[in-house]
Image (cartoon, rainbow, N blue to C red; front, side, top):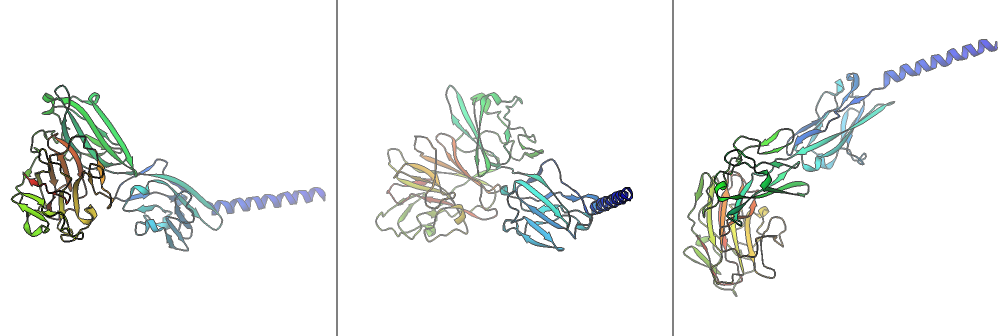
Length: 427
């Protein structure tokens, strides 16, 4: 009996083990995600693949997409046959890509931003089983069109600089002369990381004989980011900004006229010059600039402004462009958000040139060297939404705005400031 009892018990345990194994086999599953990082372009859409094994119907499961340490605030949560939660940062940007009934729980993410980069976790749960796995999303961003400038150097050479921003990941730049020879040994690349898109600054020295042939070959991968994302437009720009007028293709050198109707009463116009005629009778709520009659909404345009005469101690000035939508009567911060793209100069309390790019109270100070700017060049490229400011005496770039509003008319803006009576003149 004892032996028979033991045998019956063993058989019962074996049957229970087999039963549990079959139940586990029927209720368990696995999920598959890519091992390599998924890559997406800033502003575009991307798919984060995640599939349930054997194409099991996932409609009856709970599907949770979330970021590390953010389980309770998922990117997307699906259960009881419907999407029940989407994080505030992803509202209107996430959805399922495939058919859940076929086990496809892939996530589609639209309008990608730099903040979307990082790890994502896909978790699928049933009443008796769950699986989870993570994948990495890499964001790529194509930067602004390179801006080239030239400045004097020693021993018959010039320094050529190239400015571009908005690149992710770190870009590479190749310079070649007219014969195709790479000038790598003569260049110095500087990358600065800021929240967290890259700024590219490249400078190198060449002789006067080389400058005429210096170029990025057309239709080559002069600037590239990973995954064969290339930027070829405008890469064939020759470095020819060595004369008084920027010799850029299709540039229109404009003849400007200051508009008396767009001039506050305390500023006095005399031909192409303007000055502050009354330093005492200034309305603090009134604008301090004048606009020109001409307006530009397409093409490339260049003009110069004499901001300081010899032996004059100019204390302030403002030069740039204003959108057709900008405030024309009352004083507002001269920021791009308000429709202004302006370079300013202030002698006091600390001498500097600056731009009101973000901070509406204090301009971003720029490095322009110890020598004062006497003539300012303004280059507006409406088609590429940029406006650049140049020191024409030193033939060097000062600053470039890259966020003009496409299709909107732009009016040249000029102001002598309200700190002195010296004039500034449209050349």
